[in-house]
Amino acid sequence: MTVSNAQLGIIGLGTDNHPRGQTPKLESVGDDADERFYMLATFCFDLSRKLKYISLALAEHYGDAPPEWAQRILRDEEYINPKPATISWAEMARRAEQVMKGLHRETENAGYSETLRRLAGQAGEPAAE
Image (cartoon, rainbow, N blue to C red; front, side, top):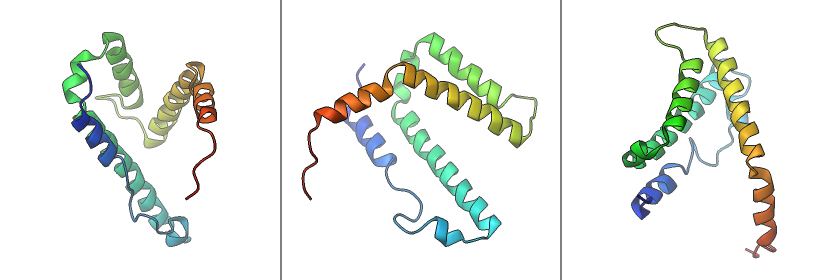
């Protein structure tokens, strides 16, 4: 199966925008630790929501994933958020960071930065606005 235009449209629409648009973020919370925490939580929840839109848009393709990828994803999920065991939020954050850094290394090793620079170099000068 190929991804449909409707699915791509959902991904395109669902991933744009963010809380309070173009308003200042850091300045708006000042030195209030609670407001800073809630702003960070809002952005985390909003990012999670957008990723869920992508997941739902591609739900019909879940079964097309290679079993090795499913195993890997499950292993990472269980490492970061073991159940029924409970670990501290601090430990979950450390584990999530460790997995994220490993994935970043993999994308770099797969040629992400080189490909990005190569393709960007093919674009020429940006058009004047």
